[in-house]
Image 1 (tube, rainbow, N blue to C red):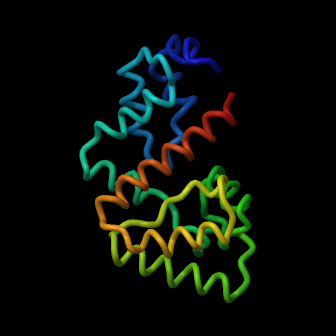
Image 2 (image 1 turned 30 degrees about the horizontal axis):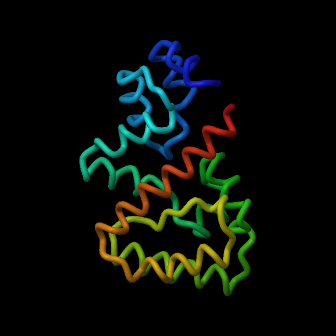
Image 3 (image 1 turned 120 degrees about the vertical axis):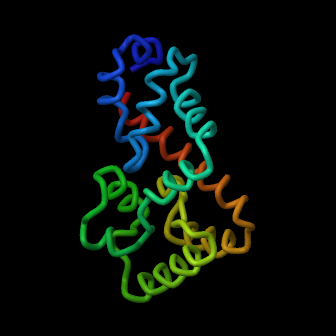
Length: 163
């Protein structure tokens, strides 16, 4: 669907079409529906995220599952997250890989107060682990900004899949 068509949808239809783009956070699309028309749909959606309060941004980040965590194994992820994690092999971790992801996820959450977010469709297990280790060294404000940037990448790919 091109942006002109998305701009023509009524608010309810717009929300219904795009509500799953942001992990457990339909408020982004609900606000975006009231701010149309957009020249670029992704930019309009992300403008809502960037205009949100820090608490709202943190809630959006916290709505994302841990990578390679129990939710991937017990199949309680959203359909989109399950497919994305599977694309990087995170649903098939051996015991040692699971333990490493678990330890790094815990260290990250302890340091920043939210889960590590990365667009897994643009990397692999090794890349995710390397980024996790590297980003553990960042200040919190850098990680908030990085998580929002990664969410933007995730949303862009999810939008492309809807087209």
